[in-house]
Amino acid sequence: MHVLLVRHGESYVNLDGWDKGYIDAGLTKLGKKQAEQVANWLAQRVQIAALYTSTMARTLETTAYLTQATGLTAIQDDRLREFGNCYADASPVPAETMPIQYAHFWGTERPFTPIDDKGGESWLLFRVRVGQFLDDLIVKYGDSTNSNDPEQTDQTVVVVCHGGVIEAVFDNLFNVGPHRRVEIWIHNTGIVHWEYKPRPNREPWRLHAHGMVHHLMADNDEWLGAKPMLRDAARKTT
Image (cartoon, rainbow, N blue to C red; front, side):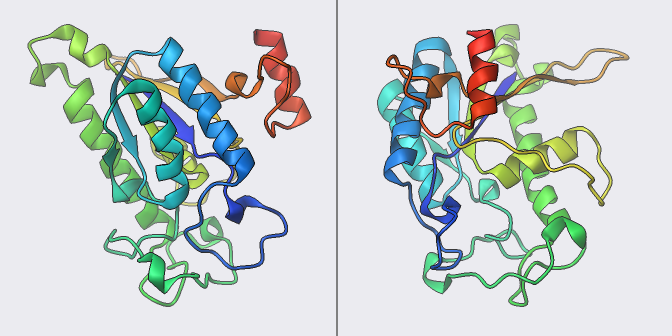
């Protein structure tokens, strides 16, 4: 099973000057262009077996471009929502109750402590809900014992999610303890490529690529919001 994690396009909450609090905001004009680029890039290069998406506005808008480009129906899953946007029981925080007032500390600084005072989740509870989603993917697409067709376990699943979800996946798959030491940054619509391939006496997961942004280079060499170092890295590999 191949898993492509795709961060959403640029949202209004990603803007440096955003002052309306942490709400469930959609994509900016640039974010919509980024979403269109990644959707077309994936549709032309990847045979997608299943498409999953977070239920937040910025991911749903990003996913809409993928459904249009591929004809697939997206499966919405609350477990893919950004950190702090679910309660401790993993139920989603309603948009009408936002903006969310987060604690004064960074979530990973105190990983056992709720991120807000209204029944919110801690970083470790966030990791649990993301880990449960991964477990379900393995059962459905990566476990050969559940299929008579060996090719089924080599399918590609695309997951449109958030930067925090991508970090939680890294923490879970690298078996990081509760106190993480590295921030894993990824650009809007950046792609992370994981492969699940269990074998005797070997690690079951392979990390093929992180932060792919090749799709952000348009034909006219106009970069859709990518930082200079990302532009240079992509040029070296295209």
